[in-house]
Image 1 (cartoon, one colour):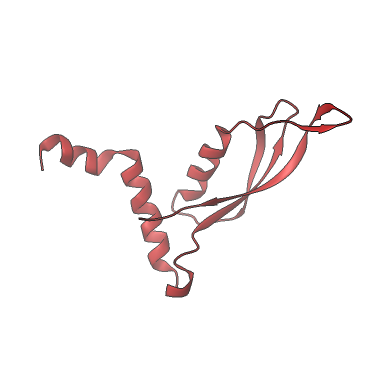
Image 2: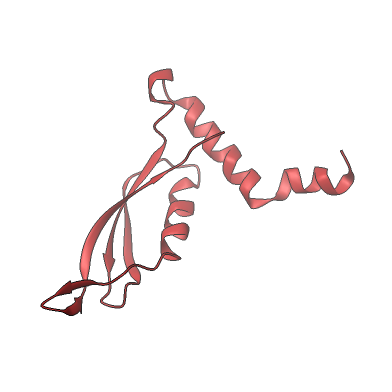
Length: 99
């Protein structure tokens, strides 16, 4: 492995996230190791943007923050009532799959 590959392996954000998720998964009983999820509750503005993200079911080890960070980048088609965009509340489940 070259120096650059070694550095990327140790510092790339996806590698660090994978290591965190793997640690959380290994702490669970074997029957629960396939279900590594963070549950979030959020408000969605009439423009489709997310705000007021709250963790409902936590994993810890930085994975909750990574789930929130990912969902904040999402854009939704606004919900509509009588043809007008409206704000709504939603629950989101973020799954972490380890390959």
